[in-house]
Length: 254
Image (cartoon, rainbow, N blue to C red; front, side):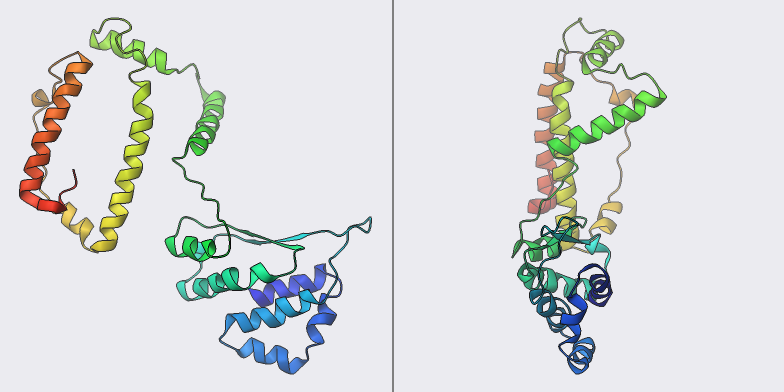
Protein backbone atom coordinates (compact mmCIF):
# COMPACT_ATOMS: atom_id res chain seq x y z
CA UNK A 1 0.00 0.00 0.00
CA UNK A 2 2.79 2.42 0.90
CA UNK A 3 4.60 1.82 -2.40
CA UNK A 4 1.34 2.16 -4.32
CA UNK A 5 0.56 5.47 -2.61
CA UNK A 6 4.12 6.62 -3.23
CA UNK A 7 3.53 6.14 -6.97
CA UNK A 8 0.38 8.28 -6.73
CA UNK A 9 2.28 11.00 -4.87
CA UNK A 10 4.90 11.13 -7.65
CA UNK A 11 2.11 12.05 -10.07
CA UNK A 12 0.16 14.46 -7.85
CA UNK A 13 2.70 16.34 -5.68
CA UNK A 14 5.38 18.45 -7.40
CA UNK A 15 8.82 17.96 -5.91
CA UNK A 16 7.99 14.64 -4.24
CA UNK A 17 9.82 12.48 -6.79
CA UNK A 18 13.02 14.54 -6.51
CA UNK A 19 12.92 14.50 -2.70
CA UNK A 20 12.25 10.75 -2.66
CA UNK A 21 15.12 9.77 -4.96
CA UNK A 22 17.55 12.24 -3.40
CA UNK A 23 17.90 9.67 -0.59
CA UNK A 24 19.67 7.33 -3.00
CA UNK A 25 18.69 4.00 -4.56
CA UNK A 26 20.43 2.03 -1.82
CA UNK A 27 18.25 3.61 0.88
CA UNK A 28 15.08 2.99 -1.14
CA UNK A 29 15.94 -0.65 -1.80
CA UNK A 30 16.85 -1.28 1.82
CA UNK A 31 13.53 0.16 2.97
CA UNK A 32 11.63 -2.00 0.46
CA UNK A 33 13.29 -5.16 1.78
CA UNK A 34 12.79 -4.27 5.45
CA UNK A 35 10.15 -6.01 7.57
CA UNK A 36 9.71 -2.82 9.59
CA UNK A 37 6.68 -0.88 8.24
CA UNK A 38 7.87 2.29 9.95
CA UNK A 39 11.17 2.18 8.06
CA UNK A 40 9.31 1.96 4.75
CA UNK A 41 6.98 4.75 5.85
CA UNK A 42 9.87 6.99 6.91
CA UNK A 43 11.77 6.63 3.62
CA UNK A 44 8.80 6.84 1.22
CA UNK A 45 6.56 9.25 3.12
CA UNK A 46 7.92 11.14 6.10
CA UNK A 47 11.33 12.18 4.77
CA UNK A 48 10.39 13.31 1.23
CA UNK A 49 7.09 14.95 2.21
CA UNK A 50 8.82 16.91 5.00
CA UNK A 51 11.31 18.36 2.52
CA UNK A 52 8.88 19.81 -0.03
CA UNK A 53 6.63 22.84 -0.04
CA UNK A 54 2.86 22.30 0.25
CA UNK A 55 1.20 21.91 -3.17
CA UNK A 56 -0.70 24.92 -4.55
CA UNK A 57 -4.01 25.29 -6.35
CA UNK A 58 -4.50 27.04 -9.70
CA UNK A 59 -4.50 30.44 -7.94
CA UNK A 60 -1.20 29.77 -6.23
CA UNK A 61 -2.73 29.22 -2.79
CA UNK A 62 -1.53 26.33 -0.57
CA UNK A 63 -3.89 23.37 -0.72
CA UNK A 64 -4.36 20.30 1.43
CA UNK A 65 -4.51 16.72 0.20
CA UNK A 66 -6.45 13.81 1.69
CA UNK A 67 -5.42 10.14 1.85
CA UNK A 68 -8.31 7.64 2.05
CA UNK A 69 -7.99 4.23 3.68
CA UNK A 70 -11.29 2.39 3.26
CA UNK A 71 -12.36 -0.90 4.94
CA UNK A 72 -9.22 -1.39 7.05
CA UNK A 73 -11.04 -4.27 8.79
CA UNK A 74 -11.02 -6.26 5.52
CA UNK A 75 -7.22 -6.50 5.46
CA UNK A 76 -5.67 -9.82 6.45
CA UNK A 77 -4.59 -9.78 10.09
CA UNK A 78 -0.82 -9.48 9.56
CA UNK A 79 -1.11 -6.63 7.07
CA UNK A 80 -3.79 -4.90 9.14
CA UNK A 81 -1.52 -4.87 12.19
CA UNK A 82 1.23 -3.23 10.13
CA UNK A 83 -1.20 -0.64 8.83
CA UNK A 84 -2.43 0.12 12.36
CA UNK A 85 1.16 0.79 13.42
CA UNK A 86 1.53 3.29 10.57
CA UNK A 87 -1.80 4.95 11.29
CA UNK A 88 -0.88 5.28 14.95
CA UNK A 89 2.85 6.04 14.88
CA UNK A 90 3.52 7.39 11.39
CA UNK A 91 0.74 9.35 9.74
CA UNK A 92 0.17 11.80 12.63
CA UNK A 93 3.67 13.19 11.99
CA UNK A 94 3.25 13.95 8.28
CA UNK A 95 3.15 17.61 7.20
CA UNK A 96 -0.13 19.37 7.99
CA UNK A 97 -1.16 19.59 4.32
CA UNK A 98 -1.73 15.80 4.35
CA UNK A 99 -5.13 14.80 5.77
CA UNK A 100 -6.10 11.26 6.67
CA UNK A 101 -9.54 9.62 6.29
CA UNK A 102 -9.87 6.05 7.56
CA UNK A 103 -12.99 3.84 7.54
CA UNK A 104 -13.66 0.45 9.06
CA UNK A 105 -16.44 -1.67 10.46
CA UNK A 106 -16.42 -1.77 14.24
CA UNK A 107 -13.32 -3.66 15.39
CA UNK A 108 -11.94 -3.40 18.93
CA UNK A 109 -8.29 -3.69 17.82
CA UNK A 110 -8.67 -0.97 15.19
CA UNK A 111 -10.60 1.31 17.56
CA UNK A 112 -7.97 0.88 20.27
CA UNK A 113 -5.06 1.54 17.90
CA UNK A 114 -6.60 4.64 16.34
CA UNK A 115 -7.69 6.07 19.71
CA UNK A 116 -4.03 6.29 20.79
CA UNK A 117 -3.28 9.27 18.50
CA UNK A 118 -6.59 10.10 16.84
CA UNK A 119 -10.19 10.70 17.84
CA UNK A 120 -12.23 8.13 15.88
CA UNK A 121 -15.90 8.85 15.27
CA UNK A 122 -18.07 5.78 15.73
CA UNK A 123 -21.27 5.60 13.70
CA UNK A 124 -23.66 3.12 15.31
CA UNK A 125 -26.73 1.92 13.50
CA UNK A 126 -28.68 2.07 16.78
CA UNK A 127 -27.75 5.68 17.61
CA UNK A 128 -30.51 8.27 17.42
CA UNK A 129 -28.84 9.99 14.47
CA UNK A 130 -28.44 6.76 12.51
CA UNK A 131 -31.97 5.64 13.32
CA UNK A 132 -33.27 8.93 11.97
CA UNK A 133 -31.22 8.57 8.77
CA UNK A 134 -32.36 4.97 8.28
CA UNK A 135 -36.01 5.85 8.83
CA UNK A 136 -35.69 8.76 6.40
CA UNK A 137 -34.16 6.47 3.75
CA UNK A 138 -36.84 3.80 4.27
CA UNK A 139 -39.56 6.42 4.05
CA UNK A 140 -38.21 7.66 0.72
CA UNK A 141 -38.03 4.11 -0.65
CA UNK A 142 -41.56 3.40 0.56
CA UNK A 143 -42.72 6.66 -1.02
CA UNK A 144 -41.68 5.32 -4.40
CA UNK A 145 -43.45 1.99 -4.06
CA UNK A 146 -46.54 2.36 -1.91
CA UNK A 147 -48.62 4.05 0.74
CA UNK A 148 -46.56 6.03 3.29
CA UNK A 149 -49.39 7.10 5.53
CA UNK A 150 -48.13 4.97 8.47
CA UNK A 151 -48.08 6.54 11.91
CA UNK A 152 -47.84 5.15 15.41
CA UNK A 153 -51.21 6.73 16.14
CA UNK A 154 -52.86 4.85 13.26
CA UNK A 155 -51.22 1.60 14.37
CA UNK A 156 -52.45 2.06 17.92
CA UNK A 157 -56.01 2.73 16.73
CA UNK A 158 -55.87 -0.40 14.53
CA UNK A 159 -54.62 -2.57 17.40
CA UNK A 160 -57.34 -1.19 19.69
CA UNK A 161 -59.98 -2.03 17.10
CA UNK A 162 -58.76 -5.57 16.44
CA UNK A 163 -58.17 -6.34 20.12
CA UNK A 164 -61.47 -4.86 21.28
CA UNK A 165 -59.75 -2.26 23.45
CA UNK A 166 -61.32 1.09 24.37
CA UNK A 167 -60.40 3.81 21.90
CA UNK A 168 -57.44 5.81 23.17
CA UNK A 169 -56.30 3.18 25.66
CA UNK A 170 -53.02 2.69 23.76
CA UNK A 171 -52.18 6.37 23.35
CA UNK A 172 -48.38 6.53 22.85
CA UNK A 173 -47.92 3.14 24.57
CA UNK A 174 -46.82 1.28 21.44
CA UNK A 175 -44.67 4.20 20.30
CA UNK A 176 -42.89 4.21 23.67
CA UNK A 177 -41.79 0.62 23.09
CA UNK A 178 -39.62 1.54 20.09
CA UNK A 179 -36.62 2.96 22.01
CA UNK A 180 -36.51 0.17 24.67
CA UNK A 181 -36.70 -2.48 21.93
CA UNK A 182 -33.77 -0.93 20.05
CA UNK A 183 -31.78 -0.62 23.29
CA UNK A 184 -32.59 -4.22 24.27
CA UNK A 185 -31.43 -5.47 20.89
CA UNK A 186 -28.12 -3.62 21.33
CA UNK A 187 -27.56 -5.09 24.82
CA UNK A 188 -28.50 -8.55 23.52
CA UNK A 189 -25.97 -8.30 20.69
CA UNK A 190 -23.25 -7.08 23.08
CA UNK A 191 -23.90 -10.00 25.43
CA UNK A 192 -23.62 -12.47 22.55
CA UNK A 193 -20.30 -10.96 21.44
CA UNK A 194 -18.94 -11.10 25.01
CA UNK A 195 -20.05 -14.70 25.55
CA UNK A 196 -18.61 -15.84 22.21
CA UNK A 197 -15.26 -14.29 23.12
CA UNK A 198 -15.22 -16.11 26.47
CA UNK A 199 -16.37 -19.45 25.08
CA UNK A 200 -15.84 -20.50 21.46
CA UNK A 201 -18.45 -23.26 21.91
CA UNK A 202 -21.13 -20.80 23.10
CA UNK A 203 -23.31 -21.12 19.97
CA UNK A 204 -23.05 -24.91 20.08
CA UNK A 205 -24.17 -24.86 23.71
CA UNK A 206 -27.13 -22.61 22.90
CA UNK A 207 -28.18 -24.84 20.01
CA UNK A 208 -28.13 -27.86 22.33
CA UNK A 209 -30.69 -26.34 24.73
CA UNK A 210 -33.99 -28.19 24.23
CA UNK A 211 -36.85 -25.98 23.04
CA UNK A 212 -40.08 -26.05 25.05
CA UNK A 213 -43.00 -25.91 22.64
CA UNK A 214 -46.29 -24.47 23.89
CA UNK A 215 -49.73 -25.15 22.51
CA UNK A 216 -51.32 -22.27 20.63
CA UNK A 217 -54.05 -22.11 23.26
CA UNK A 218 -51.40 -21.54 25.94
CA UNK A 219 -50.07 -18.49 24.12
CA UNK A 220 -53.31 -16.53 24.36
CA UNK A 221 -52.95 -13.25 26.24
CA UNK A 222 -55.26 -13.62 29.28
CA UNK A 223 -56.10 -9.91 29.57
CA UNK A 224 -56.77 -7.07 27.15
CA UNK A 225 -55.61 -4.59 29.78
CA UNK A 226 -51.97 -3.72 29.07
CA UNK A 227 -51.28 -2.65 32.66
CA UNK A 228 -52.42 -6.11 33.81
CA UNK A 229 -50.29 -7.77 31.13
CA UNK A 230 -47.21 -5.76 32.14
CA UNK A 231 -47.74 -6.71 35.79
CA UNK A 232 -48.08 -10.38 34.86
CA UNK A 233 -44.94 -10.17 32.70
CA UNK A 234 -42.93 -8.92 35.69
CA UNK A 235 -44.10 -11.93 37.71
CA UNK A 236 -43.17 -14.29 34.86
CA UNK A 237 -39.72 -12.69 34.56
CA UNK A 238 -39.14 -13.09 38.32
CA UNK A 239 -40.23 -16.74 38.35
CA UNK A 240 -38.31 -17.65 35.19
CA UNK A 241 -35.26 -15.72 36.40
CA UNK A 242 -35.20 -17.70 39.64
CA UNK A 243 -35.57 -20.96 37.72
CA UNK A 244 -32.70 -20.05 35.38
CA UNK A 245 -30.53 -18.92 38.29
CA UNK A 246 -31.17 -22.21 40.13
CA UNK A 247 -30.25 -24.18 37.00
CA UNK A 248 -27.34 -22.14 35.64
CA UNK A 249 -26.08 -20.11 38.60
CA UNK A 250 -24.26 -16.86 37.83
CA UNK A 251 -23.92 -17.95 34.19
CA UNK A 252 -27.65 -17.42 33.66
CA UNK A 253 -28.51 -14.53 31.31
CA UNK A 254 -31.76 -13.00 32.56
